[in-house]
Length: 173
Image (cartoon, rainbow, N blue to C red; front, side, top):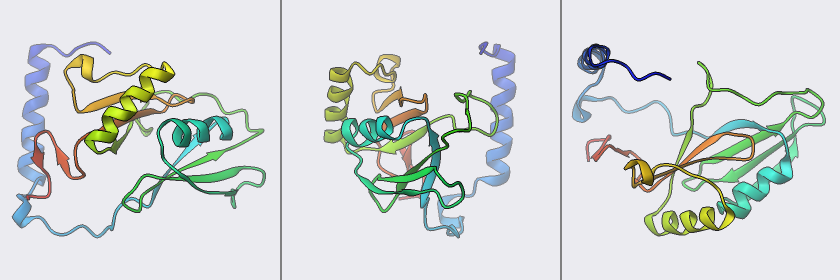
């Protein structure tokens, strides 16, 4: 992706400023969300065992359910515990001949998962030991590790607390 010119960047920042002024209410004036949180994100994998080995074995997210997909006989639906009563779900769709995904409009760019600082350092060491390439610290983003799962889904392990981003609390704490 080509870098925007200085003029394009200024125009984009002006647009973000307009959007913030129009839609972003101060925390003390913001209504409560009608949602309780994400129950689960559902992704597609090519190999159930490889996905379990990666998320449970390498990252330490316990597998909490593995059943047949109720919407597609023969397909598996399974979930990992991400903490805070949040699940990361997967399907496999054997026999459909699905191709690897590409970054495109309407797709997932990455999933950011909050990790305690001590777990962050331990998982970084595990990624190093497993030979999993990652970005983030080498690009000046010390709080994040970006890498891909066996099917190319980009994961971010983020040291920041939930509702904390860019050095500030998004909920007005």
